[in-house]
Length: 457
Image (tube, rainbow, N blue to C red; front, side):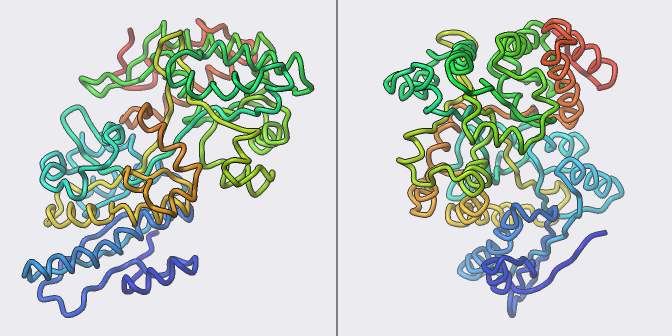
């Protein structure tokens, strides 16, 4: 079942300002030639402006067309899917395209774009991106990596996130670390000096010398966050030449080895994957854990409103902080992980040029900042850092720096299934049922048996 919502862009803006997205169609007045562009968007209360900004962009594009003397005027119709998540949404949309139907544009999680590209459903955008630098020229270069398939670019980044290790400075002080050491941790991490094993050692000191029970906590269910630790040990999970999934036995074993060492040192709880999400958060934010591997949005959604962490920047950094994912070895590369949502244009749209220009306007810094500051997402352009609203949302402004080193999930539709296998390996290692090497072997055996075209090295 899909919902079609119609109204003017002005009404949409008013509705969004009031917290209710009741109208999602931009209707040009007195247009000589109306061009209707359909946008497929998942019903997502956490990101209504992903679609809403496209509706607003139609007003800007229509003014531009009028100034050019063009008879065309663009209408945007949003078709809303009730899918619970981006994976289900993508699968639904692939079926729709498969029967010869489908929208002109759609919103997706970046890892799905190559599934649409492989079936011929996504428009290649490289030439258009080069043609309109006023729209796309300043998007963070790193974000474009999330929009690529082996033969080119097939999406436009819409937003980003940042994942890191949050840490409790009060506990580190109690464990004997001085302020100079603590304050140097972010820069040491970015320079490759602080390593993953040193993070475990710091956490061990906290557990041994304070009343804190835990050293490092991570999410208790399948998700992207812990993939950052695998990235630190060189696991990118995709072959750049073919786009196929890539599993490297030694690198998998190295990443599982870090988790194994953490559990054996009493730093990572053996039952982490059996704990409740809210319980894990509570342990960290109430001072019972040294590190929490998660994402920047957790501050605005949980840390500030639920646990009362200081919302003022200086006060926050007096007792709390974050670092990127450290390098595996001294002198190595630190990591962060982001999961962009992207705009995609259908290959068979009758008006590709107008669709590109429309999404270009939807990517304007001010509109993207509207979305970023209301949903705790990172912006896509450096000029957003100059927006007072973005600067006031200091967690976003500070975390944006991590986009310079960020990594992404593979743009492969099978990665969700592979991630489930990796998570099962984590459960095995942390519970003591599997060694690190056995977990690596398990992931390779299961993936090779159940997934297609997996490359093993």
